[in-house]
Amino acid sequence: MTSRREPQVLTEPGAPPPIEEQPQQPDDGQVVYAVTSGTDVFDSGIEGLDPITIAGTAVPADKADELKASAKHNDITIRKVG
Amino acid sequence: MPPIVDTTKVVVGNGIGFYQPYVPASPPTLPLASAPFLDPSSANIYAATPSPNWASPWLPFGATEAGLSFEVQRTTQDQTIEESSNPIATYATASQVQIVVSFAEDDFERMKLAYGGGTISTTAAATGVPGFRTLTLAEGIDVVSIGFEARNAKGQWRRCLIPQMVATGNVQTPYRRAANNRVYPVTFRAISPLSSITLTEWNAAALP
Image (cartoon, rainbow over all chains, first blue to last red; front, top):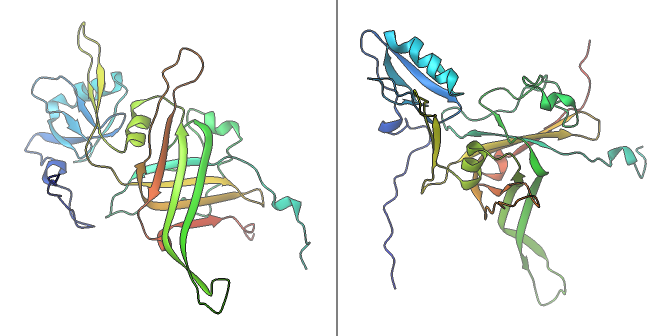
């Protein structure tokens, strides 16, 4: 019996992280927040906000305080990275 | 001339383990030699904000069932000749450097580390709905850097760094009423060259 081997995706040492791990680029009026501890992905449930990742996610500046409060309530540490 | 037997060099004491995701662009480093000894028997390790501590991005293993075990294993091949009954040379055909530990803190971070990878997702609490977390296992095995610290024969620190390790082994967690706390036994196997693995220890007091 033979088994089919899935193709492997190799990453060169020192190469930039895969596309899905790249931090989002902020538009005007946005800031980038990244999860620093407590989880890998944080879904704040705030309308219009994507889940915050370790790599960083762009957030409208006017939602930042609401996001920080939600993170604190859920024992998540986030920080502004851009 | 040193004594033939030096009982001060007979040492006991557990090690305190730390880990961090391996990032090729920023290889892990041990705390500076000037960093104070993180005494595993001191109350400091239970403090809310321990000081001294291994700085971020190092993260602690936390409580363990039986400390940690640092293992260096060699598989060898003897070279023999008919004229000699004992081997005339021995070479290593395989080497294993392992950290064996059983995590005693039952949380997703320890589970993810023991299982070799995955993603922890947290969904925030909302009105009338509690927040929750999800650990999703992954096919791939994460590469982590592991270090640990323990007392040396001079009563000061010894620090070990293994830049690249992967979690292997069979993680069996007992969910018992009272006979056992939940543990996550894991064997980390080094995948970086032997020459990248270092043990460093305090040797002499600083000069004034």
